[in-house]
Image (cartoon, rainbow, N blue to C red):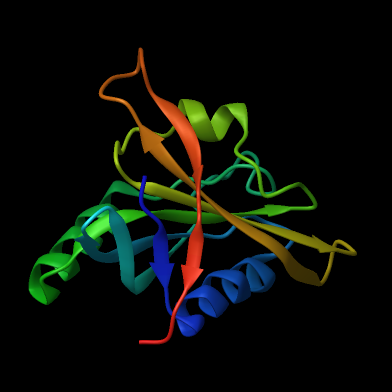
Length: 151
């Protein structure tokens, strides 16, 4: 299994987005290229968390934003490689809801834990999980290395 390769700037932007939206979850889309077994993220698209019932512990990216990200990717010659979101005051580990709502096989799902005082959050740990399998029956999350490399 390959790594998730990000620049220091991309890594910092994912973590900062989680801090900015604390105590709610942030979410976004990662664009880049498959290079061998690695997923190399070259661009982030911040998305609005459209969950109105529990934005503090759930996220949803509107279909229009996904379509926009796909269009942006095509213009730039990039693919959607995955998604990121934050876990305010919870570990950087996927939840049952994260797993149930994950459907993009071969994509990375990045989670940043943000801890705070209900007003200000600080990013602590960031992890990536690759969604493996071919259907809902055999899908699984496998933790994958995040490699931070300069451009």
